[in-house]
Length: 79
Image (cartoon, rainbow, N blue to C red; front, side):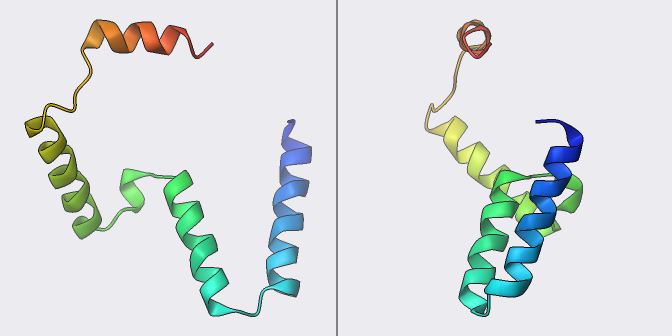
């Protein structure tokens, strides 16, 4: 999708939210979806960052890890 089309799609989405969404719960769901889809550490609060580090540390302790070579093989299949 080119940048002009992407911008137009974003504008349509914003307009739809402005015109059609009157329920606060729906807005909260939209915000959660966006925050999960677009994660920038600089936009995280300190508490959110700490929670992510704790979760990742626990996953490592539980052995939920992928070897580097296996991960590289998996990445190559994404193309």
